[in-house]
Image (cartoon, rainbow, N blue to C red; front, side):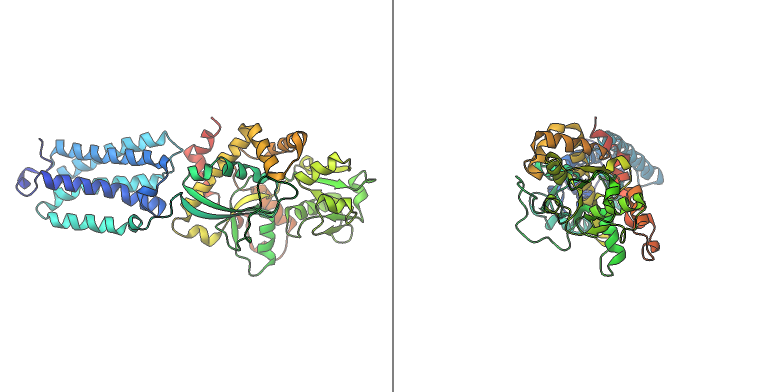
Length: 463
């Protein structure tokens, strides 16, 4: 059997020493990056991360074999031999991992494994007889990975997510991801707050109050921007992904109205002042050249179909379910805002700016975006699944209604980057002294989506 140690150290380093040394080294090479990536031990890593474990473990064992064959002396040449051997072994592992962009491992994590592997391969050569120092270093590294003793609950990393108050079409890709178990696939245990249904629905509302400070909010971005510049105590939030970046609602009027011009001086129902329906109402007023206060009444809490039926308002900015109902009942459709091609910062993945800076949260956000992007891909690639989910989400709208509404989802992007143009449009519509303190970049962070895109993950969802 070939000795793994220098010739002059034959007395002090027997087979038992090297067996223990490499066992501890292998544990460290895998445990430290796992803690860096997940904030916990490797035992709680998702299954698709196991390819990384196999690659890094194989690379380290390959390095140990190379060291045994090279038999380096404690000289500069010997050290360089080990460095080159380690770089070769880990370079092969990195190359293999690059062909699997679905593996949630950043290049930085691979680099940490490589540096640890080479360092631990060199250490016993440099220490010679001072083996005890090496074992102390191992102990410090292993016990320093506190995630080994602090396991998160089974089923994945817990995350609290709130859906906005409306059950809009743009939330369907996220609902698909829930139904298909995609969040669990990426190692998350997501607790969703589901808003009340408008009518019948197979997906019940959450039986608990809406959390005030969730980890992630899936809601209209323009309303959040509005609150950021009108409420002094509202915590700044940023979009890390979008998905609903074009105004695509309908203006539905009472019977007798025929054109948008007929709405001048009338009452237009919207949801809340800070909602996307109000944003569309503001777009309407600008488009018609009207004063949004004096030429038309924009009324909150009046965007549902019943408000139009009872005459509380003369028209509504209708989302999908109300539009389907009112169209079937013969109410006049005054405008399809999708024809306007106006950008909008609609439903987006939103997080508190400070939350994203907490160690481990960036990884949670990345996992959530992977699951969400896969939900969008299924929406586009599997229309039947999307329609089934829509009918569960929005109640019994019928096949014809589901088909009509699904077609409007064609405006959803394949790569759900933040709604750049919609953010700029919202800044324009809600122009104010406070808004002018911000730049568009104040409202989004697209670095996570760019990371996924660069890795090839987003493209792989459509192959």
